[in-house]
Image 1 (tube, rainbow, N blue to C red):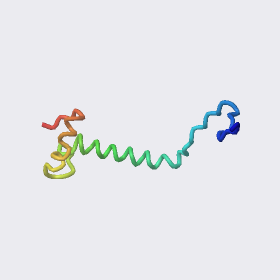
Image 2 (cartoon, rainbow, N blue to C red; image 1 turned 120 degrees about the horizontal axis):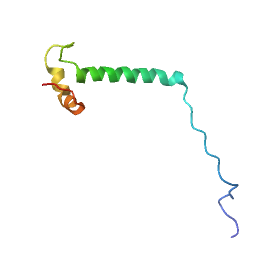
Image 3 (cartoon, helix red, strand yellow; image 1 turned 90 degrees about the horizontal axis):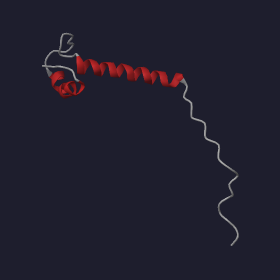
Image 4 (tube, rainbow, N blue to C red; image 1 turned 135 degrees about the horizontal axis):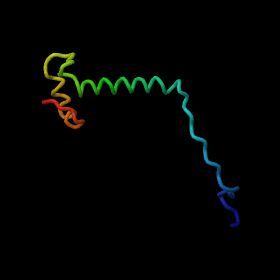
Length: 75
């Protein structure tokens, strides 16, 4: 049984090149994520305040704990 099932190594393997992503494919997702974060920041930080877009206190109650977690004063 002098045969081996594993081929002999020819030396150290070259490191694989990192995958590149074209800006054209990443940019729409980055813009979408940025706009989504700004909308969430508005609703957590400013809604039901001086710049309220919605009437009532429903939004305030939904994001109340998030306001305290992020350090926004709400009462």
